[in-house]
Length: 326
Image 1 (cartoon, rainbow, N blue to C red):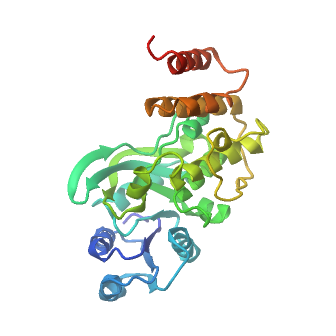
Image 2: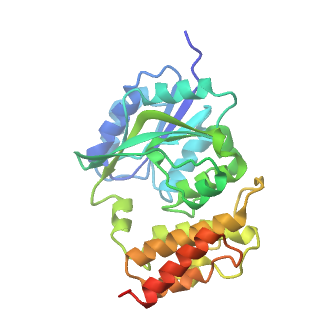
């Protein structure tokens, strides 16, 4: 029999009683032989506690007490976890059958413990299938993985020792805790330490009560999710001393709190490329939304020594903003 690595799963929960039964069963029904599974509920007032009591004999630990939010619940789980591999499965999402075995096989096949294992996820509009989402983006060069990040959290399993070494997730983040974790890992490990596998690992449910769904309906200046993203990225650039003005300030966005990059072991990266790619990525997104003033504002943060392709992109964007009829 294979000596499967221990996998630690945490479910942060609050008033998702209509979904959490499926979440719990999707993990317990994996039949994975080396699993520890925790549920940290923030004091739900719906049927959640009754469901947790029913499954209590099969859970490593659960509690239902007021907490400081999702990140706090995840950190409580990280503190208790003792496995090699870690992920959190939110109480309105669920694991794909066979996911844990697929993750374990990838872990055991790696030459060294990877930073993360990344697979696909199915996206659902409540219970109606929408599409299959690609794994968290990992490019050949770390610079691209950082600038063009796209995180499939439900399909990403992390090296628990590295998560613990970082100190868990930063509890001040309510939306970008996975981004902050993801980028900090990329600053330490090369791209080949992020293993992508051809398997569906998770299921993400979109519904009107989900906080990510609510955030996606907000504009640039209202979205706390975007503000937190900018906070993380600006902290990376500030650490490298690339500019004094943040991308957030160029767009007139608030900084929800003061954030300093937590990663201390940073690869030797091309930060000029990272900065230029990130700025142009945002300029294109803003242009698509017709936000001309904001396009010109963020382009001011482009490095002076950008490459030829970036200069062509900038020239095109500026021309289209100023002379849209051309």
